[in-house]
Image (cartoon, rainbow, N blue to C red; front, side, top):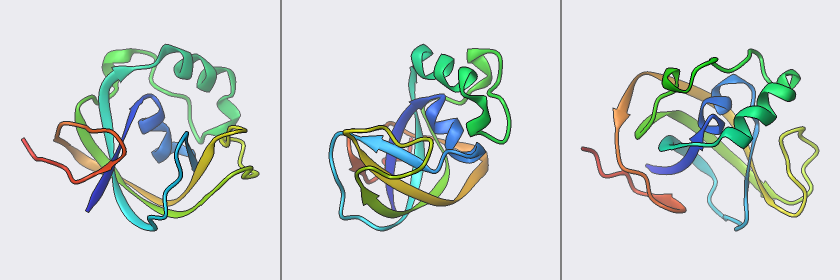
Length: 123
């Protein structure tokens, strides 16, 4: 199974209402992928999520250390890749990976991330 690495809190957001992942590159891949939470935290994304909390079913954790890093944290279906999606999560001038059926793992699986869609190397 392929995986896609995201910084936190965007990886977390997939399991709490985020239905589009924005990328500068398109994909023809359709199907189930694992979501990898990278070791990086993006404060700009965190502040954006807090300011736009109506996009989620809940607010993100208040502390950076409450997020999972460097692990596979769940799975989601990539059902399309378009530009100009109507989701509140879609950014203009980006490719929008349309997501569905997100399932968060109860126990994260430690794993190194890579760029693009990748085959996980389990630690």
